[in-house]
Length: 293
Image 1 (cartoon, rainbow, N blue to C red):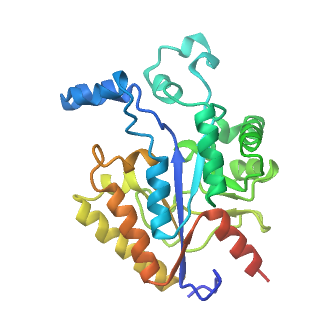
Image 2: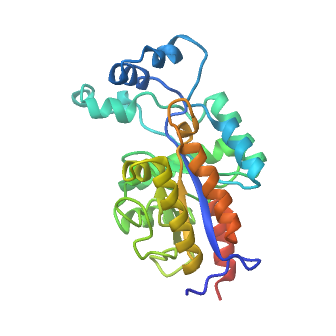
């Protein structure tokens, strides 16, 4: 068993993270309405309904569970910033449209409410920023201006990384950790139970153990997905591991994404029952660094 200290004799650590990609349901309404032949998906285009705006619900859930998590905010390029030859590419419409601006007053209010309530606010590096230090520096600066404080870490969009160059970019712009590294091609530890220290200093990489999309794509039912969550929690306890999970906020919309909220809640409850420390990576980072001789 590895000798890691999370404080107060916890058996392992469960780090909770949320990538804020699309808090508004925009062009997805048309896609789902056509794919499922269900016009109810179009309501959000003509009413005040916001099925992907789940911040308050998620904060209330975590408050009830007595935990906090990290929310990583995206500052994606706009399609107009791409060359005209790229404007008609379908993939670019998916990547660069329907996003949000971290400086919009409503987003600013959410970021500050999270910070005031004890949640961690971090950087969700835009799609091409993994290889662009100046863009990362710009995005970090904008987010810190909104937050009114420094941020400690984050995760790259789509888990994009060049190893170790992206990590060096993060370290160079003042981030203390990265959470973009996937431990397994699907989900699980794949033998990676500890954080990585790629440069032999205090910069830390948190391997991603479970992303909700990959978990459900590789299990036949919600019940089967829960059995995998419980198995991995037991493995984390046995191995004194650092386990990191990612649930995108829109998946807490129970009308469209059945079972995802329940899986998240049960994972937190089971982690606590097994004696795990539960919280955001930034706080886990401080515990790990302070325990390093």
